[in-house]
Length: 503
Image (cartoon, rainbow, N blue to C red; front, side, top):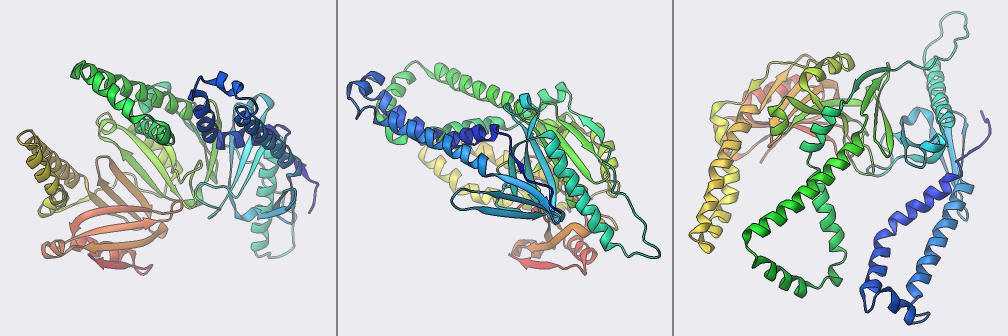
């Protein structure tokens, strides 16, 4: 069936231009930064005549090219619905066509940026099972109206409904059956301002900010005067350790404040809704994003707690979904970025009634406790020896790390455990953060049991259960358990397949 072709909104040309500028932002900064700070700055560029103006001429030509390319991409991009497919055609000199069967579409994810909202537009990402590269959608409609986005969803639902009707054997006289009406959604959760502030202040975003600044500065390594900077640092150190410590503290506080703002902007008005088939997650201040998760694609649920959040009873809940990622990376879908455990459990029970959320765990045996810290101490021993030798006697302070490693190992031993149900595996373990996986038996791809030489002597084994999630999968590990526990899990998992290894 062919109903006519649809085009993107004209603002798509401008958005394509902005996207191209973002990709060239760093080269532009390097080129113009070198010319501005060389000699007398901008005035020296004009004094050199057309040769000095060459960077501006080239930059202007590149911007003009990006603008023309954005307009052409918008003019040549069309999409339509035909034979149960979403069909897309684009390209000027090389015309490209992409046909996406509606039954392959897993979800339609929406985003409303600052240029979309005033015009009532959305960006639509079409996600299919195993689509593209990491974080890459099967297709992207840069800017269309909300009505056009709803039309795509209706066509998808209609096509899937027709396929389900054709697959159902017909007995007796054929009756006309109307297509299902639009499903009603129920709002389950809205993140409060208090939870948003706690999420922002306890997140690990400060590391992201510092690493981003480091990567940005590394692009200018050829132009940084290291000798002059070294002399300035030596002069700065003469003011004393207190000034240095205060400066480092201020830098860390600024990075932390930036990470707090970024987290608030990304998770503002975080809302969870669902209908009988899907979960819908909406969030964002500057760019409002809506992600849909098919319930049948959910492979498992992971609940994580870092030490600070665990102390106050907060947790993060991640949905492990087949082909499920969000953004431009293989980023997991967070069902709850931060939530009180008491508020979380009733919602999870409503969304996933087939899962048992409070099972009794089988714990690791006492004789396995030293396996949780012994290997770490072995790896750290050469470092302790080197620091103690070269920085004696102050280097001996490095030995303070030994009891810290032991305490963390004991903590990990007390956390690890598993529970088996008729159809479910629950696995709990800890690095510094505590993680608990809830997985249905039918979703497990591989169960792997590993034993080192020393574990074999003690009758200890580690169990690794892998499910399909994103591009790489996700593995729930229960380390250093009784060998009989590993055999019990393998027996429970058969005959779906097992894999045993020794290391």
